[in-house]
Every structure is written in structure tokens, then in C-alpha cells.
Length: 227
Image 1 (spheres, rainbow, N blue to C red):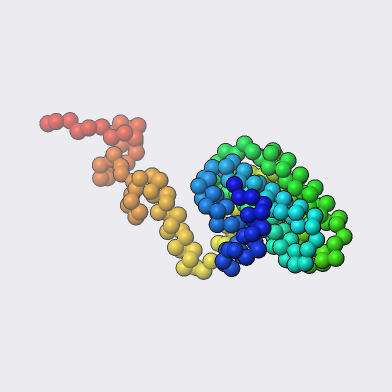
Image 2 (cartoon, rainbow, N blue to C red):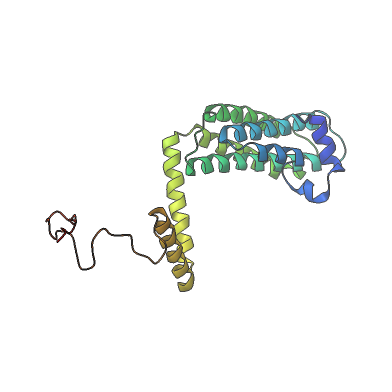
């Protein structure tokens, strides 16, 4: 587990520029790649968020020249982690993956929200340099906590409605050619589900020219009698 001091060192400039722009460290990204279950991923995101809060605690406790940049960047990372939590929950709902930690997610988010609000009450001389990022972090955390506390059936319904709206918007923007390709793709998927090669008819038990109701009246062909 990476310590708060370790995070401060990383953010101070030991990581390459490209990595600093990401909201997770390389180590955190590696941990996420190893965690495939929704509950495990959500617990990791909560841990990463708590580490940012701990770092902010230290930064606010000791005013130093140049700290506003670190406060700003840490708040932005925290906000992106909250957004990642929302996205992972919605993705698990879409994929019908079970989750059991939503209540603890909401509880911890409320605790972190209280911390952020305390930071906001501090009248620091460099506040104008990070105030917008702090407001965004507070709003994002509050919204995410509200969603985590929402009844799962209600949230599932909202996710389905949102996905349907996005699908309609995407289809409305398609060219005729794109729509044709989309229909072909849907037909292919449906054919594969039924075990039929695209463009071919589903195998039939009837002889050429026969149809449902012939011979027996039941729709089931009868075997020919030997002469």
C-alpha cells in the first residue's frame, strides 16, 4: 500500500509528465488491472480517494509556498476517482455483476465529503488558486454519495433509460450506410445466437414442398413407408 508521503513524492515530480496527468499512479493502475470484480475495484477506488484526503489534510495543516498547485492537482484526482466509482457501478449494473459494498461506499463518501467541506471553510491566502477544484470535488462527492445511497432498482432503471437514450442519439447521427452496417451486425449476432450462419435459413425437418400441417395435420412430417 502506497503511503501518503509516497503520494506526495510522486506528485512532486518523480513521475514522468504523462503519468502526472493521469489521476492514478502507475501502481494504482496495476492494482486495478488485477481486480476484476466490481466490489474489489470499488474498494480500491475508495482507498485511493482516502489517500488523497489524507494528503490534503497534510497540505492544509502546514501552509507552504507552492502548495496550492499540489492541492489543486490532488483535488482534481479525487474528483476523477469519484467519477470512476460512479462509472464502475453503472458498468456493473449494465453487465449484471453483483455488488455488495454500495452502502459502505456511500458511508465513506459522506465522511470524505465532510472533510472536503472543512477544507472549504479554511480561509487561506492561496484559496483562489484551488477553490474551483475544491468546489468541483465537493459537488462530485455529494452527487456520487447520493447515487450510492439510491435504491439499486431505481438506479438500474435510470442506467437502462440513459443507455437507451444514448443509443437513440447515436442512431440518429448515423449515415444510411452506417445504419445498414449496424443492421447487418445485429442480424449476424442474432444468427450466431440461433446457431445459423449469416444469410442461411434455419434447418427444417420438412421435405421440399412440405409445410406445417401436411400428412399428420400436426406440423410434424411422418416417415415414408417402404414399398
